[in-house]
Amino acid sequence: IVDQLAASCLDTDAQNLLSSLKERIADMQPGVLKAHHLAWSRDLELGEQFVARANHQVLECLQKLEAGRQELAWLYQEICHHLGLSAEAPQTCGHQELLTQLRQRLQQSDGHPHPPLVLFGPPGLLGHKTVTVLRFLGTSQMSSDARGLLQSICFQVCLAYGLPLPPAQVLEAHTRVVQFFHTLLHTVSCQNFESLVILLDSADKVASVRARRVPWLPPKCPPRVHLILSVCSGQQGVLDTMRQVLTAPGAYWEVKPLSGNQGQEMVQLLLAASRRTLSLMQRDLLWASLPECGHPGQLRLAFEEAWKWASFIVPAPLASTAKEAMHQLCCRRHRCVPMPVLSPCRRGLSEAEMKDVLSLDDKVLQAVYQDWTPPSKELLQGPHASFCPSFPPQTPS
Image 1 (cartoon, rainbow, N blue to C red):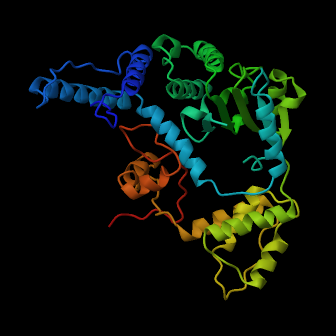
Image 2: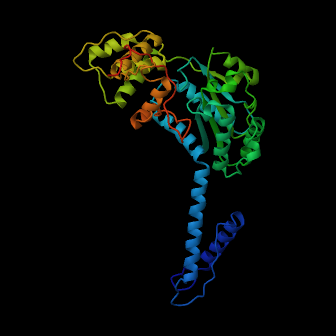
Image 3: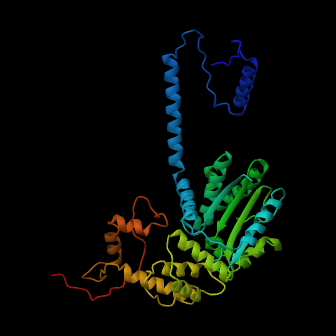
């Protein structure tokens, strides 16, 4: 296929541009273009040999793609798990000033080395072209361990930037994985392409951080690489451990509780998302039950109670603390979703036998593993739980 001008002459400029483009593609990606030399004739037809070669190339590419998907199925599952949690997270409000300052900080430090940023606060308050890596630590098996976390991040970053995957000998030792991770950050920075942003939520859920060891945390990030972590303050000395590694005072940003107005706005957004409205009396009761400085976790529990209210009822006052609100929620769930009582005794079933019996029900397994993946794909079984008999064991008739 060639371009012609109005006078039925060949467009030489277009031909030269096309030839130049083919040469550049062939130099940058040698295996992309497949050259086929066919005899030019007025009645040009594709020969059987050309069709057979094209079919073979397409099938070969599909087989390689399928093999690659099977090899990296664990990585796709890990990424989809955290993206799903991000999509299911409720829309919140507030902290706009903090978000603006954080965005400005990322833009200002994008062109030179800088320390990672640590967002800290009480539990529940932490909620240009870039490649974003997101992990909700502690919500999956790989994200609970530093070695598995770094392994999944390295694979995802290498695939995103078209870099070679870490070899098998690197994955065998944790120290090699840490060294590869640090080298990878500098390699991405030298690409001079897209910036990399790594978001690690609840870094205190990683086993190495709880043990007060964070050798994987780089003290400095290279240009165009940003590492943002969130930790809970005052929990097992995690924040103190971070301060020993990251000594720069500007690396720590405190996330403060929401104000009363911001808390009300958050609950209103949640009610609007669930298509529920409250009467004036119910709304006044709800606002009176919420503290002045709203805790997002307690606000979420208040919403869980309020969205079930019918328009004609007068609800009871809500819990004033997060602990009481969680206790009320557990009591309601216990009443609404009673578990079949199986007595673990010599005349009944043991705990292991109860897990085996309950694991035969697909609905039970689906409810158990709705928020996280099972530890084994071959054997699906319910997690460990404590079963307390509510009634004395019955003698079988």
